[in-house]
Image (tube, rainbow over all chains, first blue to last red; front, side, top):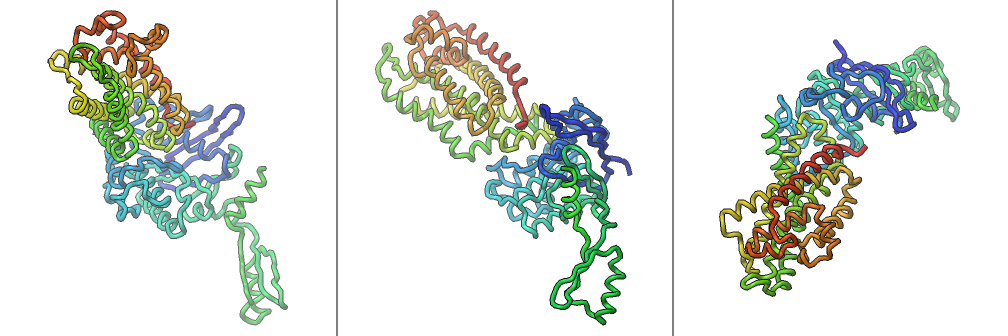
Length: 283
Length: 260
């Protein structure tokens, strides 16, 4: 495997404010890479530099072997290989789903079949509906359809499931995993930690323009090594115990209760707990 | 597909979007018609044997049509598309910016043709407007329309670049167009305007375009009533050409794909 995206010491200032203050990361081909961070952490700026929308002030960037800040005459060929799903758009309101997806397929040299893509994102029922009549979640799925119509090698997803109901999010995750199965590299920014946990091979947490940590969702912030919390019901109250070795402790409890432990729960810190600790520690 | 084919596709998509927005269709097609009805009913006096004042007025209306479909339409449409993310999305695709501008040009050109056609048709049917009758006049009409539209389009793109939001765009564009119309001889006879106003309007293309249209719709003998006692066709071409060059330079500097 080789890197689809290489970033070294990326920097970007808006006036005096350093939005991106030396970010380095490497994204492998075919992996789903989530970028997490609070609002204003520099996520969108970073991703927009990778997408070729923004100039940078320092550092080196390589996306599919090209510098997105210096594409020149290669811009079209490079954009032919990437797909972008932007945050909230409201364009093309008067066109239908099918018209829009078919039209965008003309921009690419080897597009996917537009009708198959409409099917894939679950908009077959809405193919002849005007875009302005779509719900927020349907609109977002159309955005994804337009992002993948060119069969991109890298797909950038900026907060793709904002406003989805739980069922739509599950369906969307399936879609993303199927793109990964085809070998697409996916760069995902999200506010939802369960989304990062369900999809990402690796997670980069960004705060105040810097990388806090890069790890797999299971090991972020030493989560795999963190102590578990055991709680159960005894003598009319809930008892809680922090445990470094929960399996042993539960076995011991089972012996003491001679079988069933009332209202037993064993929890490890969620990705969200870990994430919040990391972000607070920074501030 | 190549740049030109995609440009034609863009034109198709642009026109579809235009025709499906009832407000823009009404504004573009019926507003000039409404003006034609009002002014055509007021300007019934003859300015020469067999020539009604409405014949003078239609020249200005056709010239205004080129400004509406190009300058006014794009200076509102482009900032709106910048606000709603359409331009940013396109920027992220392999589509060439040239294809994008071919699409916009087609949109302007087709809406302009519809507008001019409707004006002339209603003018001829209900207000005794005389349509150009010689091949030479049609040829002149054609180059004025092409050069005028090109100028209007590129200046619309240039202005769109400095307008901050789509919502605020009409408030910027409409007064500019109205002031130009009043001072360029669209609603009033140019030769009867105060000297300073004539001088001011002569800097901008609409005055010249209106004058050119008068040379198409009025008898040749009316040339002597112009301020310069001539249609000044050569000068019209030079002024419009100069604005086209200046506009291209300004547009290439000001155009933005997204709000930063």
